[in-house]
Image 1: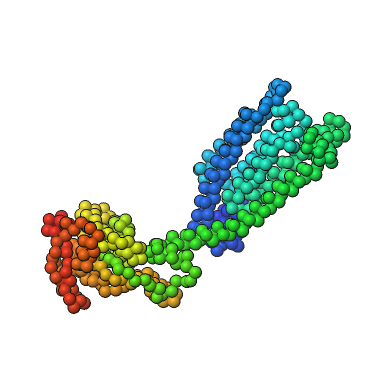
Image 2: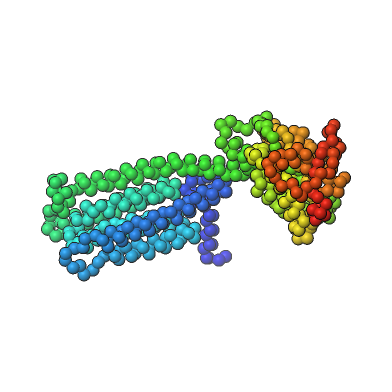
Length: 466
């Protein structure tokens, strides 16, 4: 038996929720997709933080360049060196932020370096102006500590705010301690420490109470920001869940309906409807059952998806809404639920554009698909239908049935598109172009007692669409 110790197993990678600062108990109920969405926002915030830090650095440099210089010549200038180091680190951090390569340890390091360089910059003031160390305790540059602490709130993680506040307190305690120690080392006793406020304000004296006030202010601001951000993070997570849910929901129902559902005070229930004049476009693939018999299931699905994407593009572009996919057929409505006064003209234009696309477009390599289209206008009821536990959006009315019948009638007439006279009249009223359409006469449509006057492409256009 080998005497070598077995290699310890590699610890499993922590869940994304823990790496984002969310407890395991809470992150278990949040999908990785939501956590990834939150991380994207945090990464964007780190870029903002980097640019703000760079702006602060530029301001530091400008203040140093234009500030009064000491009367005596200083052989070594520490401030430019501190600013240069800060610039190099800030540029590196900004680069990593753009590369989305800022792990938690790097963020903590960034906070420590930020605060350390700021405290070091403050410390160098007494050298730059050839003054005792107590001189730097009164510089207003300390106020930038609150800028750096508040910047961490952009990430919506309280722990980084607490770390920034802790490092700031530690840094200022070091500066205060160094000033007191230097005074004691120079004179053998703390000669510059005073309790006289006027003396403190008008000289290089050190007032311990004033320095404690600064530290208490840093602690209080840190605590308040951490508390607010901890509460705001819960809101951020909930908002991310709601926004993602609305986006996902819009893939199953029209985006307008998804938005209404997610912002409604009441749960969606079957029976919520709206009624309006609308134009319905119904499109179906000619002979798709026969075409599908020659394909593998995967190829069939891929072909349908390509076709749907190509056909739905003109519908979406012209403010139409695809309300249903019925096998290889598509039911689209204009003016319900998305309002558009020019709905009839838009529907006809979309139908003609679809025919143009199908003339030259081949799907899944070399498959040619041809479709038939029926379009008509009238009163439509749109709304949620289903049961108490499952609802969907659809449009109802005789107009919907007529559009489907007109699509089927193309087969008898050898045409590609049939538009009812109701739609044609609306197009005329809106000033639309009907030059490519011609009257085909009154059509007997199944389910309708009266014949329907219909229009189709003129002969020369019809030939090119065939």
